[in-house]
Length: 402
Ligand SMILES: Cc1cc2nc3c(=O)[nH]c(=O)nc-3n(C[C@H](O)[C@H](O)[C@H](O)COP(=O)(O)O)c2cc1C
Ligand SMILES: C=C(O[C@@H]1CC(C(=O)O)=C[C@@H](OP(=O)(O)O)[C@H]1O)C(=O)O
Image (cartoon, rainbow, N blue to C red; front, side):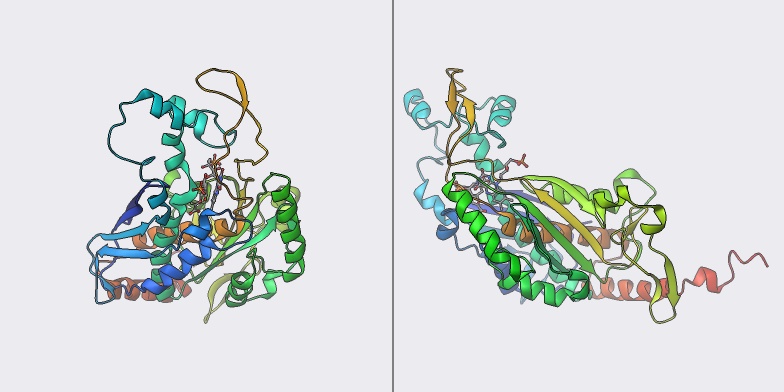
């Protein structure tokens, strides 16, 4: 079983995670982790914080000579901005109520965690909420996702993500005609991580105008994973259903408000005959489908077709032209606090989405297959792949009532 938690405040010294349950002997490439971290920082429309940070990972346990030991893996990503926040983020007691109040964030931003978090945790200063509710935490989830993606890649599973829509402008590329490698190349070189360069200029102009207006934008991202064995997840219990678990992973990203799998909400408008993916068989491919409307998942399990999952990200809650709020001390109407902010973070969110889906898929793989060592895992996955092309129970005549 793969377990991890993340820790760290946005302007504290660092983000940390301990990941437990990875197989021993998995090659870990630190450069690949740093590459994913850099990709998360890119993307047109981000604020000034991204000019300060140069996210890189430090590994302090669990790896020796480039391979996992099977012991807990500890990752640390430093916050360069911390040096500018030393006194605000001090861990020493501050016994001066006047200084505490002078510094306090007290006009909660609609759409952020400020107000509810303050009420729930009895915080007199809403900074105590925003420091941890900040999407800074997603840097660590990308680092974890890069480790799990390296595991998937070693098992010949590929995963990509890109932006399908930003600020109401949809990409026009027919991605069904592209390989995952092409999608990755196109998204990587796009300033907005879209596959379709014809829409880029319009999106950039919309972001620029929105920034001038003191407003913000959301969008839609898609993740595709190919090469997954059949039967990850299970129909036998509600919390084992992989579609539900992937949706949870996607929704756990800050500002995500919706998830679709396969053709998603569109299937509500179609006949059953247009939605179910018909079954075919060849000895080389095994069982496969003639279409993939259901996004590679049936009965809470992978069916061998690519897993396709989209997430909707709302616009950034902090507005430079702020919305109405209420001062938590005086209860008078005020404009919400302005914290330094992005105009949009949909491109970054596509990198995070890929990471969290890679991690959840890895969890499902490690649940199904023995994995003390990576060699053992790979052998088990490959022999199961062979089995699932021609399941023995049918070869042996079980179910043959003739
Ligand atoms: C990569 C990324 C960057 C974000 N940047 C900001 C930001 O600069 N300002 C902001 O107010 N919200 C930002 N958000 C969104 C908030 O973190 C999020 O809305 C907040 O935590 C409340 O959670 P909820 O929207 O999931 O309800 C960002 C989200 C992501 C994924
Ligand atoms: C720090 C990151 O994103 C931050 C997410 C965020 C929020 O409220 O979610 C608010 C901003 O924080 P700051 O006020 O420090 O600029 C973003 O920059 C990051 O993505 O690494």
